[in-house]
Image 1 (cartoon, rainbow, N blue to C red):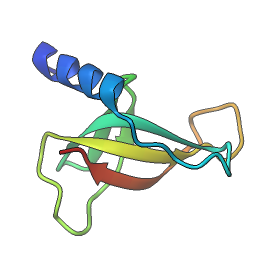
Image 2: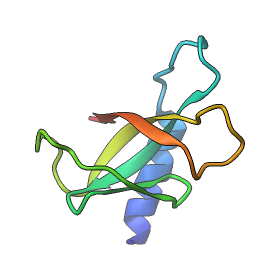
Image 3: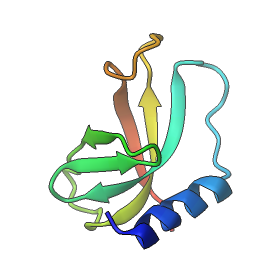
Length: 87
């Protein structure tokens, strides 16, 4: 991954202001990069499988990802519940 792309993700993460209501502590957000091969690399460098069935998200796009932690400590069972393009 390019250093400039990592820097771009980091800056976007630092400036993102969207918030999920505190109703469910299992829900959290991270910034990531969406790739059309069916992956998202989040700001922590974690790779997640995700396919945009609508085809509306272009390759190499910065996205805001909403996860559900399933109320567990492990990230291995977390689920992507929403993906939004950051403009």
